[in-house]
Amino acid sequence: MGNFWAVALVAGPILLLAVAIYVWARNRQASRGTVARSERGARELREDLEDKQDRTVDL
Image 1 (cartoon, rainbow, N blue to C red):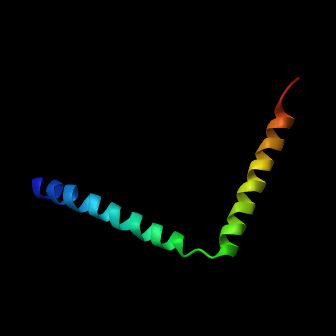
Image 2: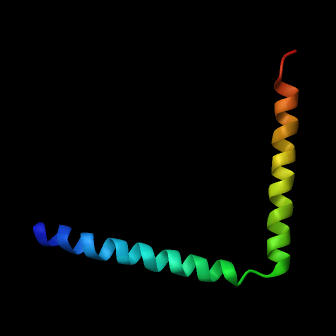
């Protein structure tokens, strides 16, 4: 059981770093259209949330 934890302590951070590098590299390859579509979706979501908050406020 002790060997398992030793491997987990060494392999865990290495695996986490590998996944972070992979995600970073994939994100850098995003096209301008993909980034624009993502920004537009985030903006629309924020507007929807603001509208929903305005309607639920009791004055």
